[in-house]
Length: 189
Image (cartoon, rainbow, N blue to C red; front, side, top):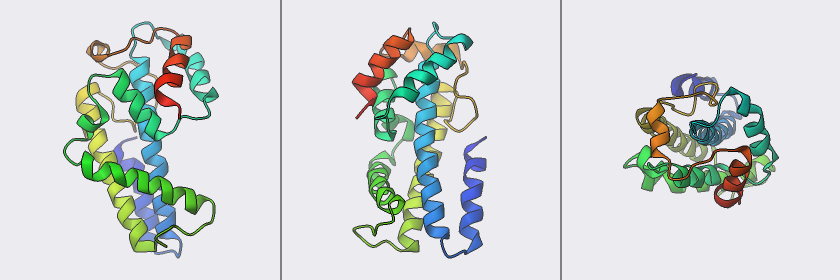
């Protein structure tokens, strides 16, 4: 999968002109953004030279057991773990786009619970949020691909990338227990 193929389904939904296409495209955009950050985070963690194929299950179990890991935490985790922050990976539009993610989270929480947003957003407002999320994902994908060799969309984040990625670690995570502690300290709400 690539950034383009991930967002093809959103394009299809938007072009459908079905009555719910605005909220549907918005909801999928949020899901894809959150998943991209998680996958980029797990990819970086797996670059530790001590982790190999036999560690994938235990690493997934550690993260799966954490009930309070959200996209904001994955961003904080990336920032704590790696020399290039998410802000640097996203680039100059970070300051404009980052607040949009928090706004989208608030809107998503209302939408997912069948409530009205505080701004009573209609299709056009949801489309604007979706477009901003898409720009964020595109910029993050391009920056991360250039920096660490992975865009956060390709399948299987538990794979090895360029060996020099581990040279950029600020913190060394060498065991699943150290991973659990790192998540508790840097990722969990």
